[in-house]
Length: 79
Image 1 (tube, helix red, strand yellow):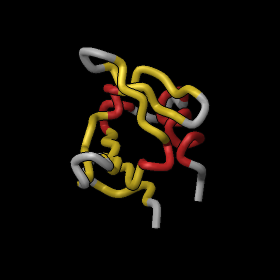
Image 2 (cartoon, rainbow, N blue to C red; image 1 turned 135 degrees about the vertical axis):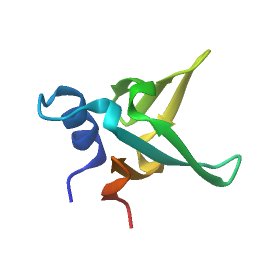
Image 3 (tube, rainbow, N blue to C red; image 1 turned 30 degrees about the vertical axis):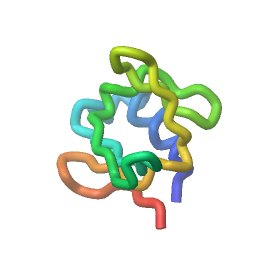
């Protein structure tokens, strides 16, 4: 399985990919549930974090990403 950081960079830079077709699911440890966000909300990848573009920047550790979908089909999932 491709590492999540490599997949997120591939979605961003590979001309064959359309980032707007992807959704990212990560586990929120405070809410204790999976949160679904469009790939386009990712401002940048910094080391082992993805930085989300909200009112304030939010850092999400990449180890919390549980699933990535493309057009509602799972393309990556952490087991």
